[in-house]
Every structure is written in structure tokens, then in C-alpha cells.
Image (cartoon, helix red, strand yellow):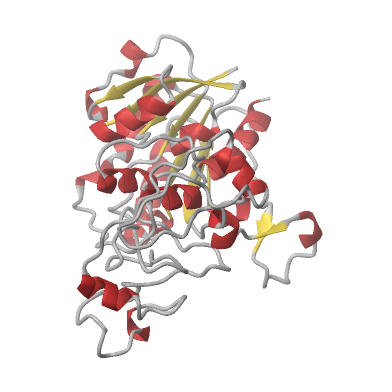
Length: 359
């Protein structure tokens, strides 16, 4: 059994992929109290310290040898959709990750972040992180992975930095799914097509603005829905926000796949970003979910068939959290927990490769 420490855990999406008989999480840490409460609900047997990571002396709280450190420091400072300011204190949390590595010296670590990390400051930030971690003896590799390639119904690219000690050899997981228009791969017969919103959500009832339902509309329609439902018989968190009539006039005029520029001028808002008021496609994967997937003016998050933003449970499904997974706090906080998470199915694919590497 390999022993794991999970830093910047959030709601625990990355740790969830390592939640099987071959791994044991000894310690998790996050500074957000609602994130910590959600983590406790789903992993009650794991010790979590809810505190700023700089206050943790790892040698004092972890008594046994650690095999793996996981973590994804807050990514807003590196995001290509944000201001990308190096002055943001969150941009330097990799120093705390380095301190944890130095104190615990695991055999392998996984450092997850947005792909913007690689280009931040002309690529110098990534080189600094790489050099810092390499100074401890780790061999470093980095690759951008798309969650859709591993059975997540969402186009979500993240950089996965892996460091190993000694002669350990880690190979990134091979994609199991493909974009249906991709004709370059000669081995597509061994893969499945990208999952769409229909694949992910067609068993959910099509509720309207301000409505709620606790009953599934249909039995599971495919293997993904079976995996997500497990033994769940009650649908939780499937309640729509109540949008104002002025916002509803905008939403009703967004075509499927459309964004603000596609709204007729007489209904089009005067301000917004390029993907504001964007409606998703029923027959395509979701675009990258953000923490604001319940806010139509923020990003593409309008349901393809309903005139409303995605519900919390729909967002969870698109991130590959199963329907029994619990979130904590206000609806806004729950959406934050989902939007900031590593999709558990992507984490599962990484966990399989970690196990192979350590064996």
C-alpha cells in the first residue's frame, strides 16, 4: 500500500482518483473551511488540516514514510483567462509545495495546474519551479493532459508535472477516448468517442428556471451514467438558480453553441466577455467548467436544452464526480468546489500509472 499526502486538496478530486486499496491518504490540507468540510463528508477517515500550508510542520504531523505527494496550488494567478499577475501571492505557493517535498521526500509527486503555468512570464516561472524541485534530486517531466481524453465529458486541459526519485520511470496515461473528427490516430478502434452532454446528463430531468427535482428522469442510459449513479436513488443538488426576467430574455435568445455576439441586438447585453452568455452543445463535450458555471454572464454555462445555467449536480457530473459525492456550503461555494477540482476520472488514470511506476 502506497502512502499519500494531498496538498491544496480542495474538495478532493485528485485524491479521489487515488482512493482504492492500493493507496492510503495519510494527510490532506486546504485553507478553505468549506472545502475542508466537503472533504470530511466524503473522506471521513482521512486526517485533514484546515490551515494555511505555511503553518504546517510536516515532520510533526506525518510519522510514517510518504510515497506520494499530490497537489494543485491555486491556479488563478496562472490562468490564461485571468490577469496572470506574478504579484498575486498564490503564484508563489509552489515554494510551500517544495518545502513539503523537502521535508517528506516522497518517491513520486504530482503537481497539477492550469496550462498557463507553462507560459507564465515567458516560461521562466515553469523553469524556476522545475529547477527548484530538481534540486532535491527529482527527475521532472511535464505534459498537458485533456480530461476528455480519459472519459470526462469536458474539454479541460491541465498541466501535470511529475517528479520521481532514483530509477523510477513514470509514463503518462494513454488516452482512452478521442474527438470524433480526429482522423490522425491509426488506433482509434481501441478508443471510444469523447463523451457529450447528452452522454453525461440525459438521465436528468429537464428542469426550468428556479425549479428543482430529486428524481431521475430515466434509468442509466450508458456506462458513464451507471458509473456516476452507483447506488444513488435520489438526485441531490439538481436545483436551478432563479434568473431575473431581464436575464431570461437574454438566455432565451442564445442559440445552442452560441455566445453573446449571436444574440439578436435588441436582446444583447451591452457588456460582457467573448464567451459570456454562452450556451453549451447537447452533442459535444462541455467546455472547461469554471467556478462560475452557475452564472450565465460569466462563461459558457447555459444548458443546451433548458433556459438556465447548469445546476450544481450537472456541473458535478461534467467533472465526473459521482452522484453520491457531497459538497458543502452555499450554492456558490459548492460550485467553486466543483469548478476548481481535478476531474476524478483523470485522477484515476494518473493513479494507475503511479502504481505501475512504483511497482
